[in-house]
Length: 254
Image (cartoon, rainbow, N blue to C red; front, top):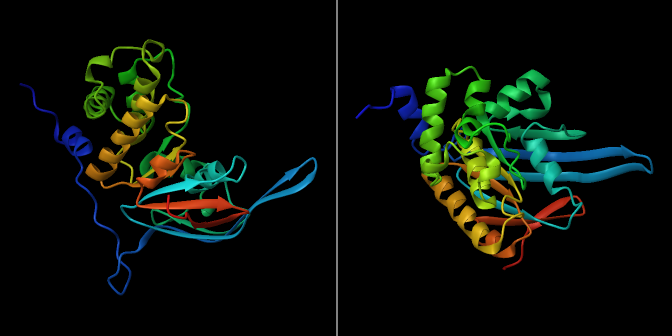
């Protein structure tokens, strides 16, 4: 049997990472937000989502963020993933000051450090599941043959090794989201950001996808932040926070 190349094997089976340490030897947070403010200018005037928001997340944590629609949950993920910039404040993510990145640096940072899953899968319809998963690898210049081999391993990890040749329209909703999860993790990021990853799924499919997120979170040493309206899923995370009036607070016992 043909063995995978060392590069493929290392990318597919990277062990859990240990946390970075402070000078005193204690674990340093992988995410640190200090005094975050975000204001948008609208036709009706300024709309402020965050006022002095602070947050620290330890390496390996699985954090749920809940809150009403429009509270800014998705915006917070966008800022952490360098898809949006804060109006003021400090945002350190994976040892990177994301607000200081140029657009080119931000794209490289996302490709290297962040896995992102949205409520909708956003798979490219003209490509197969295997090709969709390989896209982030190809985007950073990896050889196609090697990228497809790594992608095939990730499809195995999400239980879709027999669906690699199918296009998104030939997959169920749950299968599409599992392909999207494999695509998010194919570069072995440190951080998984998931914005309502089960919001478009039925209860059974949602449970299976969340089970998979939990398993991959643990086996790959991820730090995961999930936006959800599902209180049962939030209760399964190591921390649950409510975003309300521009501030984060611990969620009362669910």
